[in-house]
Image (cartoon, helix red, strand yellow):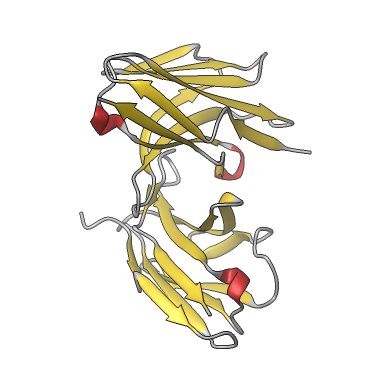
Length: 113
Length: 108
């Protein structure tokens, strides 16, 4: 199994630009999570989906952030417009609902200048 | 307010000794608690899960305890090796909430 696949691995963008991060969960996993990690705040849950449906988006910082899961094998996290304070590592993770172990991708390192 | 605290940001331990990391939480009632390892530039990797009705769990050189009265979990690495150097994160079952992690360095 290829594991959770995220793209891009690194992105540098200018303030005000739209950023789209992509995730392919492990096949057969029906829960998907987006986390953000910074030195100051650690690993924060932004949103999670179960069977492609957003269950809890209370961690999404503001309206500039949006996430979609159009099918079981693909999700996007979009930031529009981006700001320097959005600079962080964004992790996607997936889980079999009957299990407890989250599998993380390698992260997307975002720098907004 | 709800909080998860890991005892220290960084911990240095001599090779061969036991490393003990602490995870304390307040205003949560987790059904289980997990420990993950994160290497620089990588995503966290699952190590162990312990349920609320379990006192202790072991896996090779790793041992986890869970005290729901104290609201605390301890994570032990025995016979520590330089390859154990990493950041270790605890996570609660409630919304899979993570602590900020402890950066462990094993000194040869």
